[in-house]
Image (cartoon, rainbow, N blue to C red; front, side):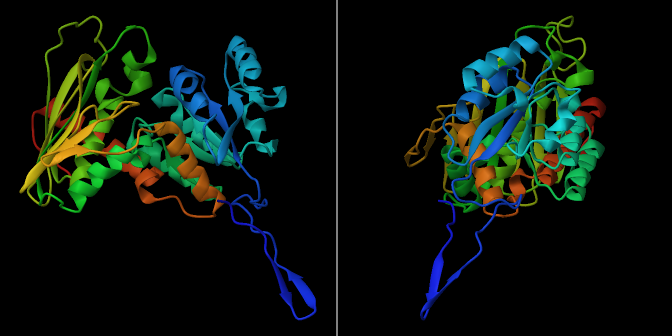
Length: 362
């Protein structure tokens, strides 16, 4: 619920308290933050835009696209006014639009930095789709730009708001079945169109690791509640070398954690796998499916995990925007610093795979 303005009466006179405001200085009452989606590809079309029809604290207010036909379609479908529609050249004019509070960057990985920085310079809060960038230095530049503009930066970690995932975090971090000893965390699928940007290293930064592998990597971290201290990794031989001429096809990696726990993970563009399993001192728990858009499913050595099935994207965007409306600092596990940490680990996995050596992470 939004905070409300209250009236306090002292004796015969009344004192009106000033209205509480959001992080942009506007009254909270009846406010929904306006989100502009930058990039109208599959994720925006099929997940984010529909989710924004189910949110309580934000709404679809604007779009940024380089395709005029998409702009026309979206304006009609979602009743978006022409003044809230931008292309990539006119994007910076968004600074003058008070109806847009948050910019959600949903572009190929190599383009994240440019549009996060431009959004911050335009005075907007930013959500950046994962992975935050291709290299760690770019992440830092994005963080710095948002700090300089006094705007907050979130990464699109939708699962951090999802009930089954939150329960897996609790089971592991609170040692409900004793200390976690081993984690198997894997995510992969068979990719289609070989010409898409995900298959171009210059745009994606890599293959499945930079796409769905990040979910598996995070899974091992948030189940143990620890940061890995070393990693080993292996690239599989390419069964379709022409299709995967620029990026890896399948990759395996192993983390070691300070407690002694270990994890084993797989990510692939040729095999379907989606599982998060933890073996503990006194039992086990797993999510399978674990990382997709849902419905997720879980069980433990004592029985099924019972949680509500939700729209992950709606929960994520509502969670971010509720904090912004309440004037809160976003939680660390979804911020740019977390995004930078992930990119550092992704690059360490690649180094381990390419060199065949243990990469120390401390």
